Length: 451
Image (tube, rainbow, N blue to C red):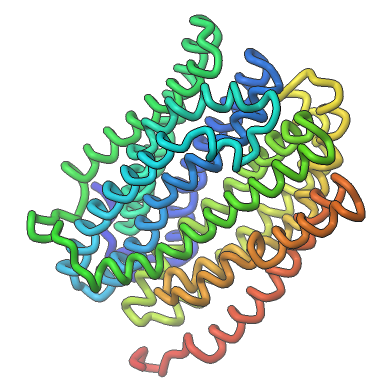
């Protein structure tokens, strides 16, 4: 029988975090493997230029689909706190509004994507020979983006209910589907970039079918027709919290634009390929830290809603310790095996020569990022939209983008790579300050547990 959300407020924190984080980590691992293998397949079977094309397109599609993730995470914070406060009616209304918001916004932005595809691809860095394969990949993938948006929204709601294993399955199914279809469409049917795009779109639909099945048969959330009516107060709360996630993805997309154009200016198409490999490794290698962050959210949100602040503080402390240990281990692996990792993606001599050192620099501050990720996630779980937004944007928005714009003027392409660890250090310092202040002044319980 699936775990009830009530366990989030009673079970041992360490065991809860493992129950929530391990399935989340496995799900993110398979999603990351999917993206990684996809990149390897297009690099080996189509060519290194195809990696550059995918690198240009994915930030666009993720930006649109992140509307679903934003609505999912924003609404899930409300749902976790509502379940903790035993207010199921609010949880139902929130879920109904999440579905309507996701569908409306995803369809609108997909329409814009179709109407202005060339202009958007150029903006995101489809320069020179990259444009043609990028367009072949972009159009078919765009069709599947509304399904991806609904999947991202639904996955976060599943996790808010405490049913992490089902959330994991929702990420594993499309990963296997995409890898299998890649082999069929690219390797055996020789369909090139269109085949890669078709495999991706069909995998999004597989995920959507699974999530639809979950909410019909397994979910605690059973909204009726009136719950789907737009509720301004709910929409406003979802939007304020979801803005954190969407702004982060928006900043990530702006960062991708700046990096792609900067690398093309200083090193041509092959430097964009280098970043394509590094960005895939960032998604893949950090999966256990991201899994702990995802596992942390419903536990912290539920106990904050129930005013069990000592449990919230314990969850913060344990999550940071576990994530920091894993992050350090990942950093050591990248340091030692950078060159063999890069060789898996491509046979391009120039790319293999440049990428290992760049990869090491980008991951240089990995051991400390756990504090930044968990710290920002706490404010989101607690429903504190403004500090959550500012801390989430601190790395990419406040530090990394300015550094990428400035440092290459003095250090060339090396300036792009060294900007990553500098931004990590600065954003972690700021997050540590605000999190410590919150824990010592806000998360305080009286001995009887009543504020």
